[in-house]
Image (tube, rainbow, N blue to C red; front, side, top):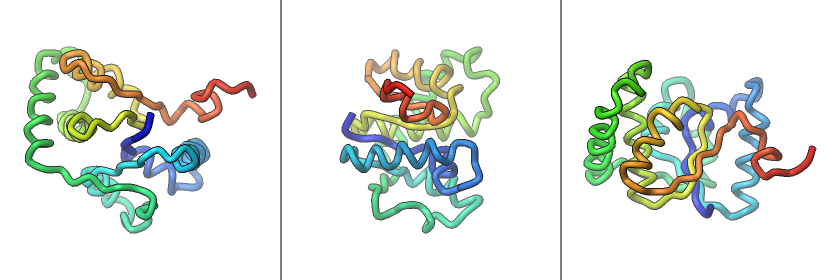
Amino acid sequence: MDSILLDTSFCIRLLKSNDDLHQNAKDYFKYFLEKKIEIYLSSIVVAEYSVKDDPANLPLEFVKIIPFDFFDGKTAGEFHSILLGHREQVANIERNVIKDDCKLIAQIFNRNVQGYITKDRKSFRQIIEPIKESRSFSLQLLDLEIPLIEFKGELF
């Protein structure tokens, strides 16, 4: 993996020192930097993060901001259409969450980003997997709840 997109849930935990997943987020971020993995941050994540905190607090000097453009909009619409065919699978997820996740996945797809880190496991199975299967693209999904040492397969 040479590139990763950070989800809003990751950014929140990275900067919230009293969160249970703060250390995991710090460990992963340090790992990405050490391994020279390109770290991407979507303008959509910036908008979501801005609801509760100033996005200037994000580690902007270490990330590349991805603007949401026309092509991302087109791809996001196609991905949302795919999920309409899986209505029962996404029935318990808020419509806004589905739309925003489709936008992020479109940015990942259009820019060939290889990884995505989030705390939202539900989106892995219910949103991302059907899109990946339909469009035949690979994406390494990192679960923020899994400590880095487990992700790397190291012994405790």
